[in-house]
Image 1 (spheres, rainbow, N blue to C red):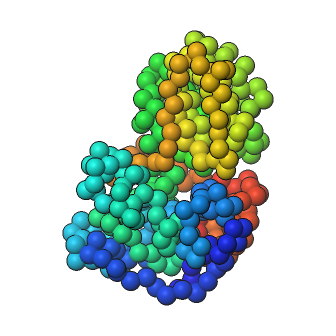
Image 2: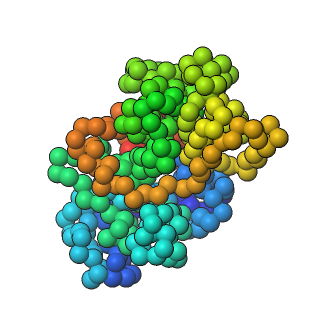
Image 3: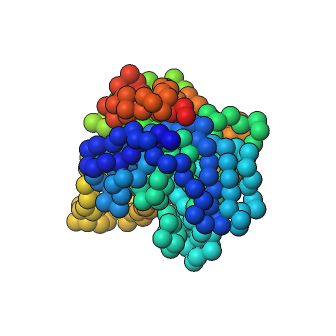
Length: 344
């Protein structure tokens, strides 16, 4: 089968590899019908994910059809259409039982697909702990509607959940890339008093204005002033940092009011520093880390009910054979790209 493979820092290649086989009783083999490229794939390419293993097939954002299941799987069966979770998790360890599936203690736990084991920018993928990591897609939900459920939408849903947003809050979202927009959609479900999005790209600003006209938009150079003018207590009540640069990290805590919550969703290429002498008296609560992707069934119900729609994010489509071109467009943010669908 064709599989897009991490060769070395700065280089992926489309290779011919053997079709995966079951390795354990809780495995499943999924035939990929639609995949996508995530910014985290670019982090692997740039060498900023040290645990990524050269030689693995990349990709962790996908939907497909179950082809084969191990003897220990009872929750899904061949022929089921499924969303694949970005994380593999056993469901049994201390962290899984408490909902912290990103910290699953199994050797394949956490973000493994497309990072430590072969992922889904291929024709087939083996999914460990498939009874936990695969979620059946309702018949009325299309592949396109479900494509982002297991990763970027799960991230936005998790970020909105742990931010504990109330209807009295002014919420600032920094970054309107794919994860930022998915975070926005999930924040909107909380019905806060006001949502402000900070973004520098003219194309992405237009996307927000066209699709979500009730959301306020500002650029980074004017963000702090704008937030102060549109909040009651000296800054945003909740800030979600989804952009992942040195400048946006500082902007996040600088635009937060005293005693606010700052949720860091972004993955950074460089270490970040908390300048405590500058921020000490703000008494901020920081929430950080990788997504706990355990809400996929609920997210699919919301999609089925028409409460979340991520299909406008799909701006480009390519077959797997042209994935190099898809990466070029996505990595360089060409042609107004938001997300690319890879048809397999």
